[in-house]
Image 1 (cartoon, rainbow, N blue to C red):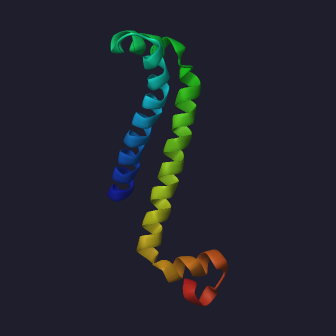
Image 2: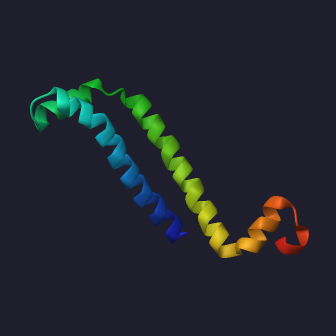
Image 3: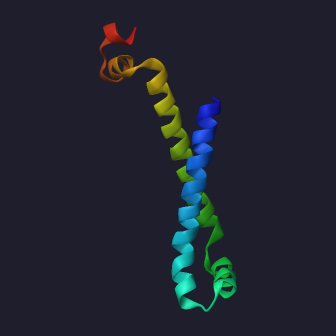
Length: 91
């Protein structure tokens, strides 16, 4: 469970960094200096939407991390058997 948490946490940090940069770069180009750009970004971003989108991203990353760990724990043949209905290989 620790690996899943760490993977999700690290992927979330990187994704959040890119989301903030995506919002910040256009604002930074319109304003002079980092401080003015940060103040404008805080005013201009619709924070509830930004938060909901990032929660969806975190949920997707959590599902990805869970699926990857299950795949590694169960093995490729077992997962293929579970997904595609080959009961012999799934056992």
